[in-house]
Image 1 (cartoon, one colour):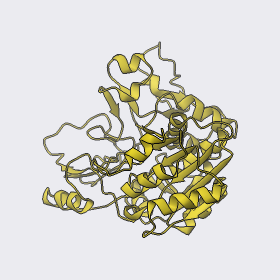
Image 2: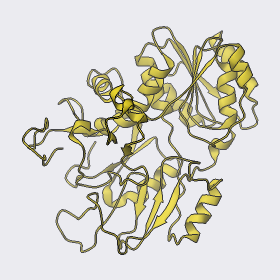
Image 3: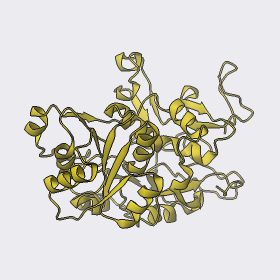
Image 4: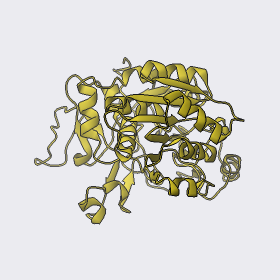
Length: 373
């Protein structure tokens, strides 16, 4: 909800426009921005992505051009889910999902059970001027400053920050255990491994809304497959850790009575990327949504001779208006994804709930007066 604007020419009303924040904001008008692919600009800053502060706070300053008004029939929780839904929209756009498409969503593999601790570092708040993302409790009943950022957890005493970023294997620290050990060496008081969420449920919702006639989704866990069924998956493919990529691909073909036009890989796991390539029909598209190791061994020649296009996904761009329209028109139901809700003060418990796979989407409620759905 907008509380204040910088000038009279701001398109938002300071009297309470309800908005959804698009976290990726470019700072320069370069060729990527001019061509409409601003998410690829080197000048992009992303809320919650190191070194930027996140948005887990009660008051937050953001570029007005990237604050999108919400219709009256879209709730705040639905507005918060526009960000993960946008990943699915961008992936399906990249894949060219349309009426009649058959889609394979690959969301589990050998390494998927392992925790992706991702980019971890510890910084000291001593002798450091806090940014606009700092939080002071509204009723001023605390003397300390709390900082709770998206993907970050901070001690209330503000004497140290444990940062757990959302992008794995970009820090050169190797395995998840190496990252946690490094964080401990740097003085971390707490270590909290997290599992990277790669938006398979949102991709499923969007694929069906865009006209996909058949969607099959794979997973190691029966409860997640059951949720996918509730969200509209046509076929469920339970897999095991020891399953070979080409074997899973043959099972996908058997289920669909043909190879899928599109495969969306949501884990970043090498074996899953291999599965997606083997499973996709000749002339089809593989979209890589999940983030994994910097290097991966894949059957590139298999893809090349069959003209299987392999496309990457870098977050999203120009998706908020469509996502808002899809939610407002009830084409997609994102409310059912939220299984747990916590007040901002219980952020640690919320992250632990997500880490233990106790829910699908865990919501932090920043407004003390609005803790309901």
